[in-house]
Length: 280
Image (cartoon, rainbow, N blue to C red; front, side, top):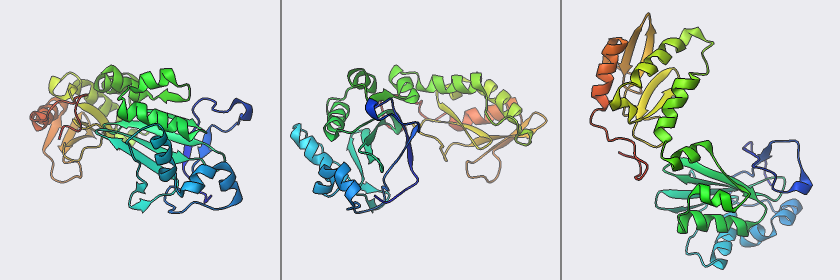
């Protein structure tokens, strides 16, 4: 199987008798439109080789469980032989194949948020997870409680608790900004601005994020958001509000002056909601 530098972190221990010291799994090249027909691939994935692609083999497994779901093999314009996705409404699942062992790696998504992920050597188990997620509309938490090879991500647990936005604010407020050692980017001033921004209800109802050394908020599930302006620290307690891609400043001054302008720029945006897709 063609090598491709794409790695998955292992989830638990799917095969206790084959423990490995490496926490990562090498994934087969998802942009290859044909499977490697070498002996190792045929031995590890006889069902996939017989079907011609992971998507085709997954469809067989889904049909055997009475599912009407069908998978797709498209990936950024390529027709992948070792990658598949299945969608229903605002939910979808992505599946990859490991390159050096028989292992299917899957992730469950909602509103562009990774809710859960897992891995198993049995494609029938993957089909069962997909049915639970996309047809039965079970939560990632419920699926993980039923199946030991599925793990809910931190963002998934936050989303399913209904605290996704507030948790994002708390991370910024409590943990601060990681690259603070480089004073050239004025991380300390940006942190102080974020603390002031958190006190504005018009901003607190939206998802906060940082991009490079800028701060902004969005009603979308997954930042960045190139529609909402961003705030840059200038030093000496001064800040500037600009369009995401740069250009003429929308406001410049001390923190309160820029915050006032920032609030006005997002006043008409809908609040971030768990029960709908992207708000815009």
